[in-house]
Amino acid sequence: MRASSYGGAGRFTTVDAPMPKPGAGEALLRVRRVGICGTDLHIFQGHLDHRVPKGGVIGHETFAEVVGAPRGSGFDAGDRVVVDPVVSCGACRACRMGATYLCQKLKVRGVDVTGGMQEYWTVPVTQMLRVPDTLNDDQAAVIEPLAVATHDVDRVGVKRGDRVLVFGGGPIGALIAMVARGRGAEVAVVEINPYRIGLLEELRLTTVGPDIDVHKFVETVTDGDGVDIAFEVTGNPAAARMVTDVVRVWGTVSIVAIHAEPIPINLYRMFERELTIHGARLYARRDWEEAIQLAASGAVPLAPLVTRTIPLDALRQGMEQALAGGPVMKILVDVTR
Image (cartoon, rainbow, N blue to C red; front, side, top):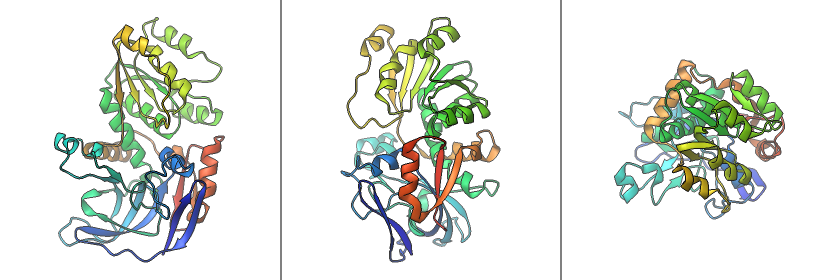
């Protein structure tokens, strides 16, 4: 079978790999789609070489079809599934607290251990969730980032009437905005990419483009109070520096993006307004279940976010396209091609 092998920064090679054999409690999956996300771009740039082994197979936003599953597992051949990539120990303090996705020995399939960027894959059935037939393959492949968004929105407790500002209108930022809007919040998204601004506006989201002063926008729409909640989803130091400036007294900041290096942040505003700052990482089972429900009901449209699908052999070029910006939102790898 074909698999994409990581060879270090900037290098992916399609190789012949042995067919995996399911262990106890595992299913054999035929992978259909894998999304390229921000974490994958960090891998591509070599930022996560301390975690990703050379020769490893990445891919954690995975949609697949069951080839075979253990008897009594509740899954049958032909079932369409997404895979929760979290591998936790179940025994550490975080796991005992119920935060298995923050396990002190956490491993993520597609980062630390073998992921879905291969034709066939074996995973524990406990990490699989069934996908409704109403969602096509491309939509199903966006459920994982939607689970990130549902977790992020739940983490800060977005509620009806909240004013929410999202820094970054990429796939995760757009999904956070739509989930928050579904909770009854008034949402605006800060974005500089013209293509993404147009797409966000097609999704009926208010945008704050590069020609608009963010501080003045917030002052105008909140009568000088500041927004209730701000999400930092860009990974850009300038956005992180600004995010505490736009939040009201007793407001909340959520740091969603990966910042590979320590960066300045305005802690005086945190002190001055008694802000709460949250980190938001990965997801729990309930976040996946909510994501599937939102996608299946059409409450959060996923199809408009998919810019293109590419074959497995074009993974490196897909990474380069995503990094270059321009007219791109979400790139999916069609592993069947």
